[in-house]
Length: 244
Image 1 (cartoon, rainbow, N blue to C red):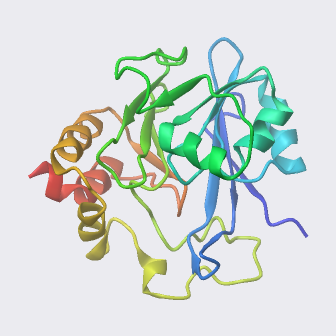
Image 2: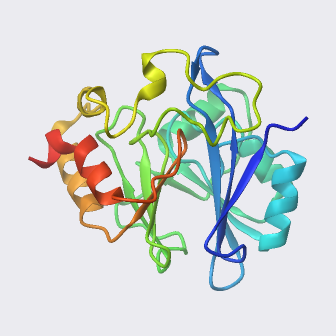
Image 3: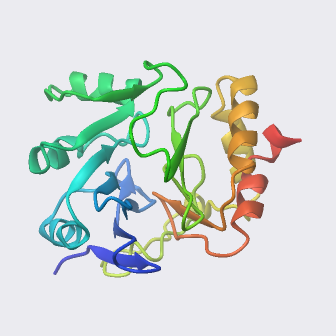
Protein backbone atom coordinates (compact mmCIF):
# COMPACT_ATOMS: atom_id res chain seq x y z
CA UNK A 1 0.00 0.00 0.00
CA UNK A 2 1.33 3.43 -0.96
CA UNK A 3 2.14 5.85 1.87
CA UNK A 4 2.00 8.88 -0.43
CA UNK A 5 -0.51 11.51 0.68
CA UNK A 6 -1.58 14.19 -1.80
CA UNK A 7 -3.25 17.40 -0.73
CA UNK A 8 -4.62 20.21 -2.88
CA UNK A 9 -4.60 23.86 -1.87
CA UNK A 10 -7.35 26.15 -3.08
CA UNK A 11 -7.89 24.63 -6.53
CA UNK A 12 -6.15 21.71 -8.21
CA UNK A 13 -5.12 24.00 -11.06
CA UNK A 14 -3.19 26.25 -8.72
CA UNK A 15 -1.14 24.26 -6.23
CA UNK A 16 -0.79 20.89 -4.65
CA UNK A 17 1.68 18.98 -2.54
CA UNK A 18 2.84 15.47 -1.96
CA UNK A 19 3.88 14.20 1.45
CA UNK A 20 5.43 11.05 2.81
CA UNK A 21 6.57 9.62 6.13
CA UNK A 22 10.27 10.24 6.64
CA UNK A 23 12.51 9.62 9.65
CA UNK A 24 15.64 11.73 10.06
CA UNK A 25 18.66 9.44 10.51
CA UNK A 26 16.12 6.62 10.38
CA UNK A 27 15.01 7.50 13.93
CA UNK A 28 13.19 10.82 14.21
CA UNK A 29 9.87 11.07 12.32
CA UNK A 30 9.76 14.47 10.63
CA UNK A 31 7.91 13.65 7.40
CA UNK A 32 8.72 14.90 3.93
CA UNK A 33 6.84 17.15 1.50
CA UNK A 34 7.17 18.33 -2.08
CA UNK A 35 5.07 21.29 -3.21
CA UNK A 36 3.98 22.14 -6.74
CA UNK A 37 2.54 25.45 -7.94
CA UNK A 38 0.93 26.01 -11.33
CA UNK A 39 2.11 29.34 -12.70
CA UNK A 40 -0.04 31.72 -14.71
CA UNK A 41 1.63 30.71 -17.99
CA UNK A 42 0.62 27.09 -17.42
CA UNK A 43 4.04 25.86 -16.33
CA UNK A 44 4.66 24.15 -12.99
CA UNK A 45 7.14 25.11 -10.26
CA UNK A 46 8.12 22.23 -7.97
CA UNK A 47 9.99 22.24 -4.69
CA UNK A 48 11.28 18.69 -5.03
CA UNK A 49 11.91 17.10 -1.65
CA UNK A 50 10.35 13.63 -1.90
CA UNK A 51 10.78 10.69 -4.29
CA UNK A 52 9.17 11.03 -7.72
CA UNK A 53 6.86 8.04 -7.46
CA UNK A 54 4.04 7.21 -9.88
CA UNK A 55 1.42 9.01 -7.83
CA UNK A 56 3.51 12.18 -7.80
CA UNK A 57 4.08 11.95 -11.56
CA UNK A 58 0.36 11.54 -12.18
CA UNK A 59 -0.45 14.53 -9.99
CA UNK A 60 2.12 16.73 -11.69
CA UNK A 61 0.78 15.67 -15.08
CA UNK A 62 -2.65 17.03 -14.18
CA UNK A 63 -1.09 20.41 -13.38
CA UNK A 64 0.96 20.95 -16.53
CA UNK A 65 4.54 20.85 -17.81
CA UNK A 66 7.18 21.12 -15.10
CA UNK A 67 9.27 24.23 -15.82
CA UNK A 68 11.21 24.63 -12.56
CA UNK A 69 12.72 22.04 -10.23
CA UNK A 70 13.78 23.60 -6.94
CA UNK A 71 16.15 22.32 -4.26
CA UNK A 72 15.16 23.99 -0.99
CA UNK A 73 18.48 23.80 0.85
CA UNK A 74 21.82 22.01 1.20
CA UNK A 75 20.31 18.74 2.41
CA UNK A 76 17.12 18.48 0.32
CA UNK A 77 18.90 17.32 -2.81
CA UNK A 78 18.46 13.54 -2.76
CA UNK A 79 15.73 13.33 -5.39
CA UNK A 80 16.62 16.21 -7.71
CA UNK A 81 18.11 13.79 -10.23
CA UNK A 82 14.82 11.86 -10.42
CA UNK A 83 12.91 15.02 -11.30
CA UNK A 84 15.49 16.25 -13.79
CA UNK A 85 15.53 12.88 -15.56
CA UNK A 86 11.75 12.92 -15.85
CA UNK A 87 11.54 16.62 -16.80
CA UNK A 88 14.78 17.36 -18.72
CA UNK A 89 13.55 20.69 -20.10
CA UNK A 90 12.87 22.14 -16.63
CA UNK A 91 15.27 24.62 -15.06
CA UNK A 92 17.08 23.12 -12.06
CA UNK A 93 17.90 25.60 -9.29
CA UNK A 94 19.27 25.01 -5.78
CA UNK A 95 21.66 26.49 -3.20
CA UNK A 96 25.32 26.09 -4.14
CA UNK A 97 25.84 23.80 -1.13
CA UNK A 98 23.19 21.42 -2.48
CA UNK A 99 25.00 21.37 -5.81
CA UNK A 100 28.23 20.45 -4.02
CA UNK A 101 26.44 17.61 -2.22
CA UNK A 102 24.97 16.34 -5.48
CA UNK A 103 28.48 16.24 -6.93
CA UNK A 104 29.86 14.44 -3.88
CA UNK A 105 27.11 11.84 -4.26
CA UNK A 106 28.44 11.10 -7.74
CA UNK A 107 25.41 12.48 -9.58
CA UNK A 108 26.03 14.40 -12.78
CA UNK A 109 23.49 17.24 -12.91
CA UNK A 110 23.63 20.60 -14.64
CA UNK A 111 22.10 23.44 -12.62
CA UNK A 112 20.61 26.54 -14.19
CA UNK A 113 20.94 28.65 -11.07
CA UNK A 114 22.50 28.55 -7.62
CA UNK A 115 21.66 30.61 -4.56
CA UNK A 116 24.91 31.56 -2.87
CA UNK A 117 26.81 31.48 -6.15
CA UNK A 118 24.73 33.79 -8.33
CA UNK A 119 24.44 37.54 -7.61
CA UNK A 120 21.89 38.21 -4.80
CA UNK A 121 19.52 40.00 -7.18
CA UNK A 122 19.44 37.13 -9.71
CA UNK A 123 16.06 36.31 -11.23
CA UNK A 124 15.21 32.86 -12.55
CA UNK A 125 11.90 33.55 -14.26
CA UNK A 126 9.25 32.90 -11.61
CA UNK A 127 9.72 35.97 -9.40
CA UNK A 128 6.55 37.75 -10.53
CA UNK A 129 4.62 34.99 -8.77
CA UNK A 130 7.07 33.40 -6.34
CA UNK A 131 9.48 35.51 -4.31
CA UNK A 132 12.59 33.96 -2.75
CA UNK A 133 14.96 34.75 0.11
CA UNK A 134 18.22 32.85 0.52
CA UNK A 135 19.24 32.38 4.17
CA UNK A 136 23.02 32.47 3.79
CA UNK A 137 23.40 32.61 7.57
CA UNK A 138 21.45 29.39 8.23
CA UNK A 139 23.39 26.17 8.67
CA UNK A 140 21.42 24.31 5.98
CA UNK A 141 21.48 27.32 3.61
CA UNK A 142 17.71 27.32 3.16
CA UNK A 143 15.65 29.34 0.73
CA UNK A 144 12.21 30.63 1.71
CA UNK A 145 9.58 31.12 -1.02
CA UNK A 146 6.43 33.22 -1.09
CA UNK A 147 3.69 32.27 -3.52
CA UNK A 148 2.07 35.67 -3.65
CA UNK A 149 -1.35 34.77 -5.02
CA UNK A 150 -2.15 32.19 -2.33
CA UNK A 151 -0.16 33.99 0.38
CA UNK A 152 1.73 30.76 1.06
CA UNK A 153 5.21 30.64 2.59
CA UNK A 154 6.96 27.50 1.32
CA UNK A 155 10.16 26.35 3.06
CA UNK A 156 12.12 23.32 4.23
CA UNK A 157 14.09 23.44 7.49
CA UNK A 158 13.65 27.03 8.65
CA UNK A 159 10.45 26.14 10.50
CA UNK A 160 9.02 22.74 11.42
CA UNK A 161 5.54 21.91 12.64
CA UNK A 162 5.78 18.48 14.24
CA UNK A 163 4.42 15.92 14.80
CA UNK A 164 3.92 15.25 11.07
CA UNK A 165 0.42 13.82 11.38
CA UNK A 166 -0.57 14.52 7.77
CA UNK A 167 2.58 12.97 6.39
CA UNK A 168 2.04 9.82 8.44
CA UNK A 169 -1.66 9.51 7.63
CA UNK A 170 -1.09 6.31 5.61
CA UNK A 171 1.99 5.07 7.45
CA UNK A 172 2.14 2.01 9.65
CA UNK A 173 4.60 3.69 12.01
CA UNK A 174 3.85 6.47 14.49
CA UNK A 175 4.87 10.11 13.94
CA UNK A 176 5.48 10.52 17.68
CA UNK A 177 8.54 8.71 18.99
CA UNK A 178 10.55 11.30 20.92
CA UNK A 179 10.55 14.87 22.22
CA UNK A 180 11.82 16.00 18.81
CA UNK A 181 8.54 14.74 17.38
CA UNK A 182 6.80 17.73 18.99
CA UNK A 183 9.03 20.45 17.56
CA UNK A 184 6.64 23.17 16.42
CA UNK A 185 6.18 26.95 16.73
CA UNK A 186 4.43 26.49 20.08
CA UNK A 187 7.24 24.40 21.57
CA UNK A 188 9.72 26.22 23.79
CA UNK A 189 12.72 24.66 22.07
CA UNK A 190 12.11 25.72 18.46
CA UNK A 191 13.32 29.35 18.82
CA UNK A 192 16.47 28.13 20.62
CA UNK A 193 17.20 25.54 17.96
CA UNK A 194 16.67 28.07 15.20
CA UNK A 195 18.99 30.54 16.88
CA UNK A 196 21.65 27.87 17.31
CA UNK A 197 21.42 26.97 13.61
CA UNK A 198 22.12 30.57 12.69
CA UNK A 199 25.83 30.52 11.87
CA UNK A 200 25.77 34.19 10.84
CA UNK A 201 23.49 36.06 13.24
CA UNK A 202 23.45 39.34 11.31
CA UNK A 203 22.53 37.61 8.06
CA UNK A 204 19.82 35.71 9.92
CA UNK A 205 18.39 38.94 11.31
CA UNK A 206 18.29 40.46 7.84
CA UNK A 207 16.59 37.51 6.20
CA UNK A 208 14.21 36.68 9.07
CA UNK A 209 12.96 40.28 8.92
CA UNK A 210 12.58 40.10 5.15
CA UNK A 211 10.31 37.06 5.38
CA UNK A 212 8.45 38.50 8.37
CA UNK A 213 7.59 41.45 6.14
CA UNK A 214 6.06 39.25 3.45
CA UNK A 215 2.29 38.95 3.11
CA UNK A 216 1.47 35.33 3.96
CA UNK A 217 -1.29 33.56 5.86
CA UNK A 218 -0.15 29.96 5.39
CA UNK A 219 3.13 28.13 5.95
CA UNK A 220 3.89 24.97 3.98
CA UNK A 221 6.87 23.24 5.64
CA UNK A 222 8.71 20.22 4.33
CA UNK A 223 8.53 18.72 7.81
CA UNK A 224 5.23 18.67 9.66
CA UNK A 225 1.67 19.81 9.16
CA UNK A 226 0.72 22.86 7.13
CA UNK A 227 -0.02 25.94 9.24
CA UNK A 228 -3.32 27.46 8.12
CA UNK A 229 -3.98 29.93 10.96
CA UNK A 230 -1.76 32.57 12.58
CA UNK A 231 1.06 31.72 10.18
CA UNK A 232 2.80 35.07 10.62
CA UNK A 233 2.68 34.64 14.39
CA UNK A 234 4.24 31.17 14.02
CA UNK A 235 7.12 32.56 11.94
CA UNK A 236 7.75 35.46 14.29
CA UNK A 237 7.70 33.13 17.30
CA UNK A 238 10.26 30.73 15.85
CA UNK A 239 12.53 33.62 14.74
CA UNK A 240 11.89 35.85 17.76
CA UNK A 241 15.55 35.92 18.76
CA UNK A 242 16.42 37.44 15.39
CA UNK A 243 13.45 39.81 15.29
CA UNK A 244 13.73 41.41 18.74
